[in-house]
Length: 359
Ligand SMILES: [Zn+2]
Image 1 (cartoon, rainbow, N blue to C red):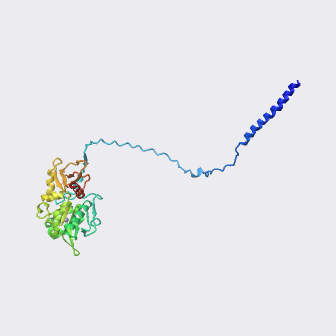
Image 2: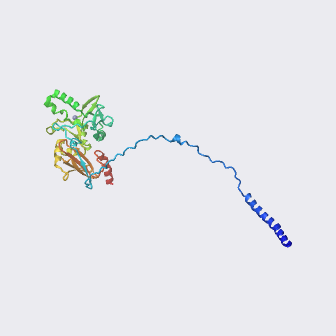
Image 3: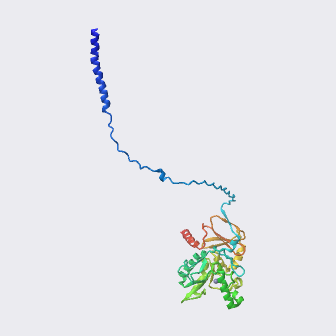
């Protein structure tokens, strides 16, 4: 019994300190490596936003009923490859650079706001003068007119040419006609002046040249240096409208000062054939879309024909010009090799082309 007791005591004495040491060591290790909880600098926090302040007040609105638009279903057009279809209106017969205005055919004045007549004062070059700031012409002819006058000045050195009469209203023409009647009597007046409505001056396509000499405006005779004009104006689309010895057809005495724009190449065809506008418009009636008049001008081939159709079919990718005759139909002019309709500008294009071809 005593021996057993001794063994137990010895065991207790040996085991208890070992267990105690191990327990303390474990506790010591776990306490040593606990990281210290240092205070952390607070991150910058955004300012508090008062959402009640910035939220916009949105008034309540009844939502609108959306409009229901029926989509337009286009009619299937007949597509003719390589052609475009132009639809003219009957009133277009009275528009264009080839309209005939004479004793038989009155000018049809365009509706208010539709006229293209502008004051040319700010647009003309130094090679031409005007007698009043209100001198008006069709905007379409100012380019060709400037080109013609620059060429005229370069080749003649004459710098005192003015336009002494251009666009005239009905009232202007009435005043001029009444004055002429008072001077010549009615029959005599008709050979010089047109009754109101029948003057080319209404269109803005015609004008009278004069010469400024010592503060006076003198007549444009078309002789001497000035003979350049009747000889060369056709190159720019202008004609001497009332030539000598053609009164029987034009109904108007020789007027060396009165020029009219008809366009290229019509002015040249008329000059080459010695036709006045009345004759040209009569001849052109014989030419059709299938058998057009062919004319080469400055290396450009033109096809010209007459039609009374209001629908005009044109080849795609050509230059073209359509003018009414102010009687019953249209003169169609087309030219190939140019993509944009041009009149006087064709000179420049043609020059570039020909210099390219010659190399
Ligand atoms: Zn005139």
